[in-house]
Image (cartoon, rainbow, N blue to C red; front, side, top):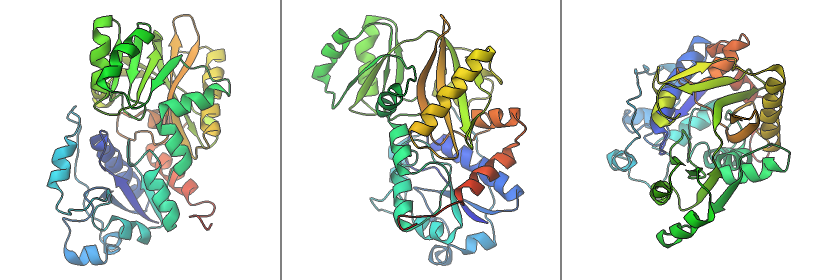
Length: 357
């Protein structure tokens, strides 16, 4: 098949997305597909004009995949915008949509805003372009932690208590601090990869945490802090995979620890008893099905010190980097990385495509 692996984009998870996309593209080529890696935001602007006019030529002579690595830092999005030669307000880079229309399917290796939040999916639905993963509505709901928690709580999924605040201004911070108990967790509701997440254990750190979170969004989620062990549990093709237990070597499971090799110890399957395995898997399936997600997802959990499982959030386009968790869970049931990528592609090709399908 002719496949565009779409990565990069313009979100705080841009660098991780590029690593995911590079690995996915390599795996799909190994399975015999004509896979091309494309940065959503930068597009084909560095290619010759004949490629931009006829981008399907890329499928005939596959561009070389460059080695990429994670430097532990968030991308400077302002610098990235300034560096783009194609001066357009569109998040789609030059030639991207034209190339995607020439493909059999687009593999969504995007993470975060303008990728995991349903906007790109909605565009593809309107244009009749096939893509992997969940549709625009499930993606949009899953990206918003507040909406997700409100919906799944009514389905009996245990989640930490929370308060949420819209259009927060500096003058609102004192009231938010007064209204919530410490310890707590301050989050930007549409962030990913633990960006914009701050654990508050002391009152003096509460207001600064809100100010930092406001750099990412004017909406704020303040969540009850649950002490315990961290787990993640993926769903693939209608079944829950074995969980992964995550143990940071130092500090919390933050942006840097998530993607730096050796920064966290990961145990798969996680250390759970049989009853806990069944409960966590059931919760992951309820979240996946309630939001109407497709093919695969990954839900994050805390097993509290008193033995209760709490759902935290869902990832509708989980990371596919060398240290990512879904590939580990798939491998635990005998599915190789290459097979996993192919399963995701094959499922995307089933059923109608576009709003007229």
